[in-house]
Image (cartoon, rainbow, N blue to C red; front, top):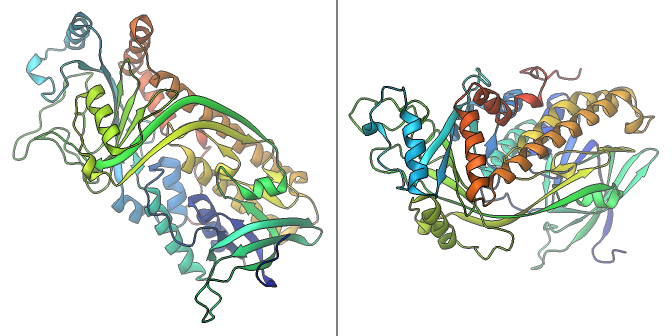
Length: 483
C-alpha cells in the first residue's frame, strides 16, 4: 500500500500508453494522427543517451513514412546495403583450397584480393538487399536514442503534453468504465522544497497499452502469462570509431564508394567477394573457432561491433572488445573512442495473449526476441501499424466488449505473435551459426554458407534479413484522420 505522497485524481484520456520507447511513441503518433487522444507515460525522466538498438528494416521505414519522419531518418542514419560473411581461423591448406575455388573460372587475378584481409581470413560470400526490397534496398542504421528523439519531437508537434516523463506505473484496475492506472511521479510538483516530492496519481483511460519493454510492469500487474526460454549465449558489444583501412570509406552515412581510394577509379570486386570489409554500407560477419564477431555501420563515421563471448563471459570493457576483435578478425579498433559498451545475455519471452480486457501488449512487452538479428524495433512498429486503426475503431464504435472478444483484434494479435515467433527462429539460427565451431562442424557450416551466398538463394536470405516476410502489402503513406 502506497503511503508517501498525495493521492490525487489525475487526467483521463482515450488510450493510455505505458512506455516511451520507439514502439510506444510511434503508436501514440499514429493514434493522434487519427484523432484519438493518446497519452504516453514514461518512467525515465530524461531521454535515453545510448545507441541501444540500431536496425530499421524496410517495413520500419514504411512506419516512419506514415508519421512523416522517413526523410529526416534517412538523412541522419547510415544505409546498410550489403552483408558479407568471412571465415577466420583454420589451416593454411584450407584457405588455399577455398581461395583457388573463389577465383576459378572468374578471369580475375589474385591482385584484386582485398589488401586489408587478415592473413587467416577469407570471404565466404555476400548478399545485397537490392532485390529483396527494391524501393528501399537497405537496412537503416540509426541509434535508438536518435530514433526516440525524432519520434518524441513529432509527437510534441501533434500534442505538446502527450508524453509524460517520470511516471512509474504502480497499479492498474480493469473496470466496466475503463482502465484505472496509478502512477508514482517523481517530477517536481512546483513547490520551493529542495526535495522532489513523489506523488501518486490516478489515471483513467478507455484503453491501456503496455509498451514498456521486456521487463514490462504493465504485463506483470495484469498477470499476463508468458513463455520464457533462455539461451547460454552471451555477447559483448560496443560502438567505436570506424577502423576503416587506408583507401577505404570512413563510414559516414550512405556511401557509393566500395573500396575506392580518393582520386582513383573504382576497381570492381572479384566475383563472389562483394563490397570491401569496413565500407560504410556493409555489415560484416566474421566466423571462427572462438565465436562470431559482427560489425555494422553507424552514422558519423562509427561502427558497432558485437562479439560472442561464450557461456560464462568475463569480457565487459571496451579494451576486452578490442582484444576480441583483433584476435578474431585481425582488425584494430580504438577502445578510447568507445561511446557505449554492453555485455548481454539472450532470451525469448512471448505472451500467451496480447489482449486482456481493455489491455493490449505490444513490442517487447508482448514478444521479446534475441537482439542478434536486430529485428525488435521493426516488430514493435509493425504491431503499432496493425493495431492503430483497430484501436481507433474500438474507441469510436464499441467499448462494450473485452478486446479479446473482438474478432478483428484477435486475428491481428494472432498474426503479430506468429510474426514474432518467426523472427525468434531466425534469430536463433543466427545464434547457432555464430557459436564457436571448429573441425568438421566449422567446415560443414562454412560450406553451407558458401553455397547459399554464391547461389540465387542469397536473394532469399536477403529478403529474410530485410523482413520481407513480416508484412503483406504496405501501410498507407498518410493515416486517415478521424472526423
